[in-house]
Image (cartoon, rainbow, N blue to C red; front, side, top):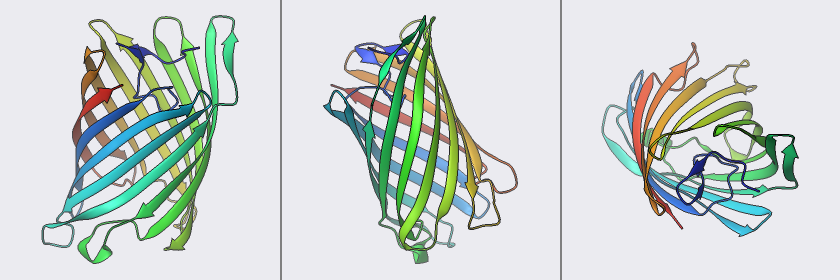
Length: 230
């Protein structure tokens, strides 16, 4: 049962709990207090079976946070998402999800690239599909390091996706992490995405990003993505 706001050819891959197969080529520019980051990455997913989704990311950075322009691989991420149950409560469709994210730092902190830690991050969420093509996806995730610098962060995330006319969509993605290793700092951020399906195999989108609060991870950012759907 499809519960995500639909795009041409099926569910919208901008929903992390959608049952889809896609590969996105993405770029994001982030403006920081001490410089900038250009993040070039592959962001994709496929269904191993009807209950298990595999998501992957590979990031390459260019940054000048050390005073010089530096480039290197930043991180690789692999995520397994298990869907134990889905159905409907009246007109409201739902899909439950449990998962585990594994991320490996590939960067060099002397270059200002990478987090300095390898992490495991279990999470839980639910996708709620409303009539009219609106999705709400609340998620909670616990990030813990198993090597490198200590990481103990609880992240609360809320995604809203709205299907629009002419095969377009709008997505709001708000993240509120609580960093327990850094005096309960809250490096919150939000992302607004507008996308259009070119056909059932191809989509384009643009992103606007903003950091929130005194502990924000960046000031602002922009990005774009090209999505291949299979």
